Image (tube, rainbow, N blue to C red; front, side, top):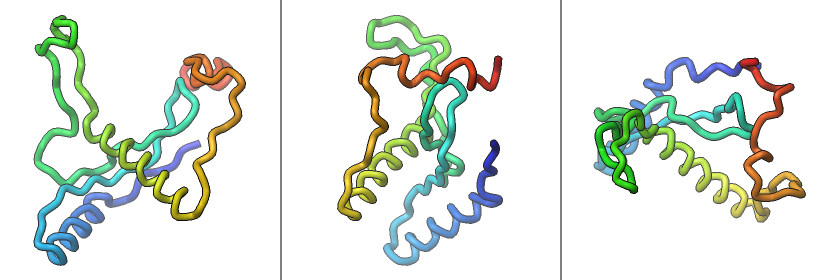
Length: 127
């Protein structure tokens, strides 16, 4: 199953940014996001589709030491996607609270196990 992203998220981001600037006199960054399925895990997360800033969508940490002092050779954080996911979590909580209900989780008898989020081989799109 495939769902296409918006046809012109750039135009939407530009419109939102201009409206905020006109109404409040503040120039803000706008991040347009969409839900995104992951091929090897259950569940969706949000990813950035468009951001209204001049900086890169990620943070390149290559060449920097990690918490244990080892030099990172391939780590580029998807900063825009992380912001989109955090915003989605906050928005979901606001929606649930304003509607008087709590966000539900699917029943899981083995809570806390990583195996519970891994996609079974039968659903693997890349096998």
